[in-house]
Length: 207
Image (cartoon, rainbow, N blue to C red; front, side):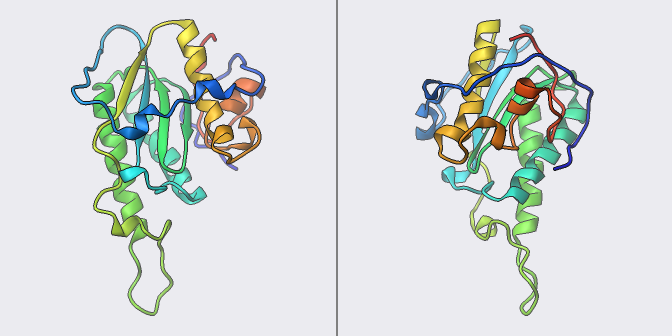
């Protein structure tokens, strides 16, 4: 699988399979009201956002690849470091720096808008008698692609960085999608575990 290379990277490693204790699902009940964003402190940001009503709108490989391609483009335009990520069928986790242009909120707005627009274009059926372009089939039927908010946690220490990375890599395993994090192409486990290029280049940090 080819990568979308938008920066150079090399890095350290996190080995072994993350323990399921890193996977907590409290945010599925809805993003907390009155969220406060803390910017300008030099922290990384652990960002979580989910598909509309937690539907698996990113359930196909093509959908997840489209998301990754748009992530790379937004990253290049807004100039932020991408430390880790995982794209799941119905939600996404990112671990990023603050962008040189705008704020994490602006980055989230643009990323979600672009993915939604392109996915809904892909989800439209062709005229009757032609092959359908839908992927997944129900994208065109939902009123919106994303839940309206996102969760933002300031990652302020090396310990927290490691915890969030392991949390992300555990997701596909705990959800029963793969047996080992290395088998899920839409995350950065392979970069940290084996120093391999993946779909997106990663900015390394000490963990």
